[in-house]
Length: 145
Image (cartoon, rainbow, N blue to C red; front, side, top):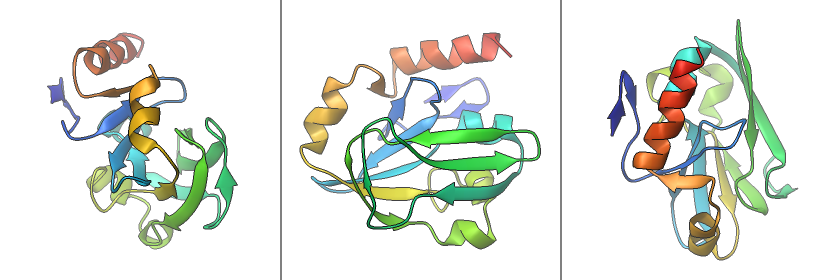
């Protein structure tokens, strides 16, 4: 899905609550991958630092689990589900701007393991697939710029 100059792959879920702009990819029945969407990666400018909680740490839903920073922006990353951080993208230490150049691929940030992932994603009204709700949210954000 394309909304103006921003791309949102159809196979992902997106968080609409603030601070939003986090995408979610189901890797398995119990693991999700997180990253920053194209809108935030372009609006932030060149990402210079990414900080996250450590692997093995237990997280609660909506807990701040990381930040990403550019010269003009500090964005927060909140956990969309409760679980355990099982992997972080070590490439981001040396090349944090992978978030800018490949937000949905090499620029991923964390893997979280949890239970009942599918139902948790579907039941949360602020987590949506690509579609009308996402488009309305992004268009509202664009109008606020």
